[in-house]
Amino acid sequence: MPMITGPLKWYTVASRLEQAIYAELTVTPARHGVVPGAIAWDACDCGLLAVSVGRIHPTEQFPNPAQARIGNSCDAPWEAAEIIMQVVRCTPTADNLGNPPTVADLDASAQEIIRDAYEMMRAVSTTLCEMNKAREISDFVMRPLVAQGPTGACGGNELRALVSLPRN
Image (tube, rainbow, N blue to C red; front, side, top):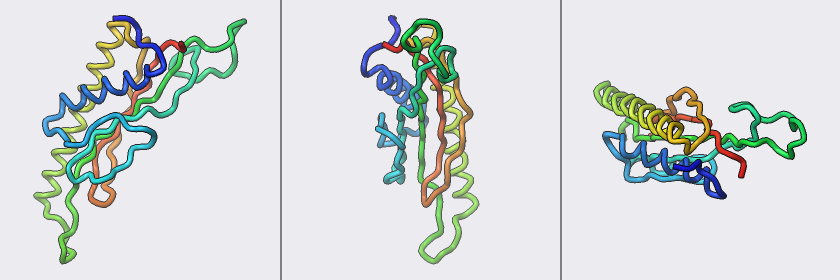
């Protein structure tokens, strides 16, 4: 396949990663998709898979941002974008009487979130590797997966990856 280009190139990459994660998850969330800007944890009770495009920068040497023009070129030949992926689940909270969640509920929640982390890492790694081998992207670097929350009744995982494409 040809390298991904054009005005929606970063949406294309984000969408492919969202679809790959969704297909890999054992428990698929009802809400999933590519979202603009920062990922909001609205109504995480049914689960949420959200992918967003964060920072985009020109680069001469991926993944480093270009610091100055090199030679006579007008701009760096590559762009790098940070793709942000989150899977968020409902986490146990205190009941109406203020009693803390049971250890069994906390354990079940931990298992679900840890399984999500494994499945996210596997889906993103496999997809980006396949896209790189097919020369759909020029390069990629996965960042560490980071547990999120719990905040309120939500918790989950965030994974970020830097992907490089031509500047056109």
